[in-house]
Amino acid sequence: MPVPESWSAEAYNQVPQSENRIHSDEVARAYGFRGALVPGVTVSAYLLHPAALTWGRDWAERGRAHAVVRSPVYDGEPFRIDVADARSDGYEAKLFGPQGVHCASARASLPRDAAEPPSRRGDPLLSREAGRPVASRAVMEELRETGLGALPARWDEAAELTTYLRNPDRMAPVYRDEKLAHPGFVLGLTNWVLGRNVRMSPWLHLETWSQHHRAIPWGAELVVEAAIADLFEKKGHEFVDLDVGVFGRNDDDAYASVRLRAIYRMRRP
Image (cartoon, rainbow, N blue to C red; front, top):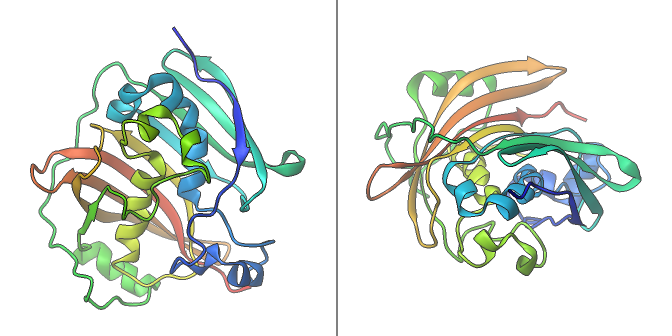
C-alpha cells in the first residue's frame, strides 16, 4: 500500500485584493509581518496535499485532518512539507519555510468507517445586500445566542480559491483532473461564512479540525451553516471557535464539517 510522502513547492497568495487586508503588504507590515500573508487555508492545503496524492477520491470522501498555522508563510517563498509517521491510513506533516522556520503542522487520516455527518438546521440564507456589524466581543456574543446566517456558495470557475498552487497543473490529480473541491476551498468556506456575518479586517485563520463526508463535485451548489462554539481573549487578541457544516443546497446532505479557530480581532500594533 502506498504511503504519503514529503514534497516541496513555492507559496502562493491568491487573494492580495481580499477584504481581509492581512493578505496585503501594507496592512501586514503595519502589524509586524514582512509582507502579505498566504491564506491559512492555502497553507493547510499544502499540508494535506500528500493525502490527496496518496488516497485520491477516498480522501475527498472521508478524510479527516487537524491543521495548525503557527507562523506566517509569504508569497513566492519556497517551502517544504516533511511527512512523518506515514502509514497507509495516516501521517503527520510539518511545513518549513526558508531558513528552516517551522510554520505549520497537520495530522491527516483516512478513517475506515464513514463519520457521522451533521444535519442541516435550515438557518436563513444571507443576502449580498445584507448589512454586517463590525466584529466585537459584544457583537460576537450576541451572534452566539441568536445564530449566524447561512452562506450560499458554488464550487466552479468563479470560486475565489480554485487552486492552491500558482501552477494548477501541480495540484493533486483528484483536484486537477476530477475537479473535486480541494481543502483550500473547503476550509475557505469557514472564513467566508464568518466574513459574511461580520466585518473583520485584518484577521487570522489559525486552526481547523475537518472531516469530509462526501466529495464536492464541480458545479456543486452549497449551503454553509455556522455556529459560534466559543469566544475568548489571549494576549490582546480576540478568538472565535466556529462550528461549520457544508451541505448540498438541493439535497441537504453534508459534504464536510469543520471547526475553525481564528483571531477575529487582532491586537493593535
